[in-house]
Structures are given as structure tokens and as C-alpha cells.
Length: 484
Image (cartoon, rainbow, N blue to C red; front, side):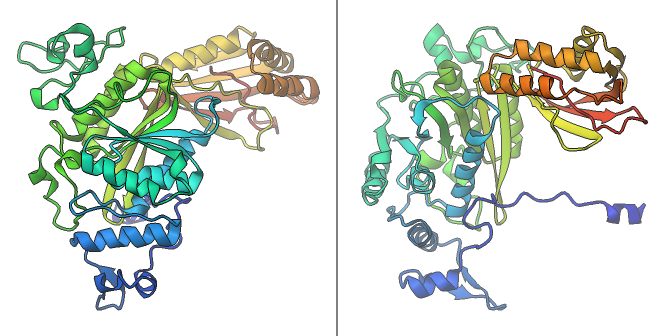
């Protein structure tokens, strides 16, 4: 047993994003100290001769951020004492993850802003780091929101100090005249807790079916409700459209909790670091606002500081009927943060071409499946789909597999029917070419037998696997199913 355990592969720790400027070349403190005299006093050398800085010194971390933005990004930047000081590699990871989301084919691309990408930074802070990085690295435009005079003043200064990108960034003041009620309270005039599915002891019934309306139930407990300044609703203007929102939320419920990590000093004001209910309540409010705004944003995203909160928030997203949920992990040194993204845009239909590599086993992820549909439901749909075309199907519910035997004629009929069903030009054209220029099977073969297995990964995401069963058939598995 011991040898088997030693042979087990250790789970690989997520690494810095491959597009990140620092993925191959981490910041060279010695080089930066030689080039920037203001940084040199903060660099010291450990016993092994490596240059280091004191991460508990706010002045050191702020100067490092300043010289990295100037040296690697050509950005002039500064913040006053006490404001939240971001780490450039970590924030770059978030920007590049959003870049991946936008360039993926998970949801359809739109021309809402022409070819320009427009983002919304919730609580941009004095540092204004996400708009500065997004504009300088990728040419994105931004609206950055905040409520304090210091944050607004310095965010504006940081934008104007970089005239080559200043026209891409708008700093927008959030009205902080009074705490805003939740969206549900605004619509109903009732406390959110009054509408929650709670038993007599006050515990929320997690098994209760979500309402078909767009209202959103916040977690039970007074400290879990967000009653701060507006987040998205009330800040986003009528008619505005965005590709994404980005957020570094207040992670903590108190400044005492925020100061529990003695190994770092990133500064931060109470407005930046703390809110009632912490990050769970704040991101829950973003979710609630997203229910009201729906497709005003292609992607809603937020950073998450605690993995336990990530699981909680995903469960909330499933209840409000989002079409897609994506997560990632941001790693910088010993610090881990998670990224959470969701969308109300219907996922793009994926037609899997028969022109695939010569493989006998293929798999893909089926995302955006409504919560009430299980792996077995999908298997039954597959069985019904092929049976309707005359194929022979045998479903095994215990192993979550269905064996399918389809003839050459049946295969071509299926492809032809799919052409008639799909109304997207490029996809239809490709299918027409597929069905007319090549058959599903070659002339020497009369049938193809394969097995499809479906496994649930997380609610709403299924793994679909196909494998060849016909021993004498040299052809690869050619998936021509449309699981739309």
C-alpha cells in the first residue's frame, strides 16, 4: 500500500496564468533596485543570496507595485498612505482569466460595443489597478466605480497620469448618501429575511425549490445581508452594455479580521476591506444585482478569498437560474484566491464535427445544463435522439452509459436533419459540407457501434465520453450528436 501511495500523482498546484508577464520571468528585485533608486532601500539579501523585500512593510509593497507598473507596463501610478496596495502579478492573473472567458466559445460573442471590450470595475479604489492593466495590456475600456473622495481623487489622478489610455477609463462616483436596500426589498417592500425559505428555528431550507420569479433570497441572518452603497443597480446607467464586471470585494467583516495575517501588509481602508457579512454578503449582492440586470453584462465576475464561500456562492447562482458558472484559482506565492464568473447569456450551441483526430475515445464538457436535469436525463435524451433515427440503443442506468449502433444511411440522415435544425450560417454550411462530401462511415463499413457515457462533474456541468465498440471497424469515434 505504501508504494502505491508513493506512486500516486500529487495534485498539481495551479500556477500563474501563462499569459501573465511574470509567468516565465518573476520580478527581479535586484535589477529593479539598480534601475530605480527609490526601490533600492527596500531590497535586502537573504542568507542564500536572494534579493527580497519585507512584505509586512506597506512602503515596500507600494514601491514595488509602482516600479513594476512603470517598468513592465509603462504606467505612472501612486496611492496615498493607507489605501489598498494591489500586487501586480495577482491582478494580472484576473485580467487574463477574463480575457480567456471573453475569447472562449462558451457563450455567443456579441457586437454590443463593436469590436471594443468594455468592463465595469466594482470598487476600483484609489489604485484603479484593473482599468489601468486592462487598458494598457488589451486596449479595453472601463468604468471604474467608487464612493470615497480619496479613492475617486486618486483613481482620477492615476488615469490622467497615463494620457495614452486615459480616454479608455471613466471614473464614476457611487451615491453613498444612504445605505440601499436589497433589490428584493425594493420590489416588495419587505425584508429579505421575511421572504426566505426558513423553518421555525430560523434556518434556511436549502432543499426548497427556487421561485420562478427573478427575486433572490439572501442567506438568513442579519449580518449576512448587504445594506451598503449601490453595487451595480443604481450605478450602471440605462442603456449601458458591458462585456464583464470585475471585482476585488471587501473580504472581511471587521478590520480586526483583516489584520490577522501578519505576513503581509497591503494597506486598505475599512471601505475597501470590510462590509457587514464580508465577501459572502457583498458577492451575494452582485448576484442579486445580476438577476435584475441579466444580459446587461455578458459575464459577471468576482474574486473570492475563501473556498468555503465559493461553494456557497455557486449554490446561490444555481438557484437564480444562471446559464454558466466558471471558477478558477489565482496563485501568487503562498496566497490563494478564487475567481467566480457567471452569465445569463444562453450558451452557444456546439456542433461537434466528424472531422476529428483519429481517436477511439473522445470526451467533452457539456456546460449550462439546467439544475433539474441529471446525467441520466441526458443519457435518455441521447437514446431518444438516436432511436428516432432508427439506430439500435441500449441504455444502462446503473453505469450511466448507452450503447448505440448506427448504420451508414442512418448516420447521414442524422447529419442532414441537423443541417435543417441549425440556423447559424457558418455552422450550417460546415454541416452541409460534411454531409455532402463525406459519409459518416466509409463504403466498406455498414455500421458503427459506440458507447456514450455521461457523468456529472458539478451541478450544471456534465462530462460526455464516447468510445468505439465495433472491434472490426478501423474508424475512430465520430461524434455527430448535437446536444443542444
